[in-house]
Amino acid sequence: MNRLAIISGFLGKSHNRYMVYQDDCTTAEKIERASRVAGCDGLELCYPADFDDPAALRSLLARHALGVSAVNFRARRTGRWIRGGLTSADAAERREVVDDLKRAMDFAADFGCRRVTTCPLNDGTDVPFEADYGRLYDAAAACFDAACAHDRQVRVCIEYKLSDPMARCLFGSAGETAGFCQLTGAPNLGATLDIGHSLLAGERPAQAAVLLSRAGRLFYVHLNDNDGRFDWDLLPGAYHLWETVELLYTLGRLGYDDDWFGFDVAPKEVDTVATFTAAMSLTRKLEQIAGRIDAATMDALMARRVPADTLSYLYSLL
Image (cartoon, rainbow, N blue to C red; front, side, top):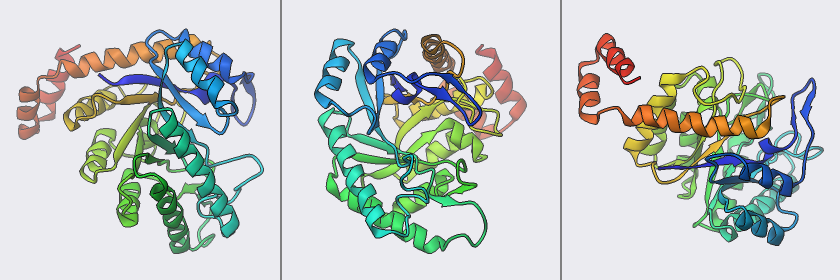
């Protein structure tokens, strides 16, 4: 069974472009909050925010018996790398990003998770003819190649997203990300499949998982949900019950069953602990539904491809 982790950034300040819902808090307070979430096994730590005092961080995690699923490298920083760090036209900025990514990789190794995930949201374009796409891909490839060579035992995961804050992010889909990883050739470069980002890209998340797995690039999974129009970071299953169940079922078939799920869920104005307790509970419920699917029966249904029969079977499991 996969363990469940909360991205630490979602345990603190909650805001959007219009208002602040909840104030920020210290890393110690975030960890204490996570310890009160029933079913939470660990945290996806954010770099650099959580790493001011690594020794104290390690002690806090041990005190609350929380593991680490990954280190989330923030590739966007206030006042820095505004036009994208990995694809910046400034070579000094690109070196700065790579050096910082290497430090995050070192922390991932030190904390035992050996996985860094990053969502390069500022790397992309807003309008046609804004940038030379070839130069952008070449710059990103050189940066990721240099970082991945730093420690082949640490996996670097690109969390793709179609848009926001750029109108079109450079890595917008599973196919684009898998293709880019294959072009770089780095064996420890792969993808974070965020189900909400997959839905936003018009994908079937289970199909995206299979593609990434076939390419050897399915490294990590984030769970949440949205309405397909914006990345709302809602509770798992809020809108896409069967898509979520299909993803969970497919991940099990692919062998992603003794790893971690990270929760990319925004509490907004609702109590943070209660929100994530619900996220854990709903995920285990969705896993139970997926676990009721008899593999032989589903294989036969998929071979016949009669939607009426498949949906009737699925709803009989509820």
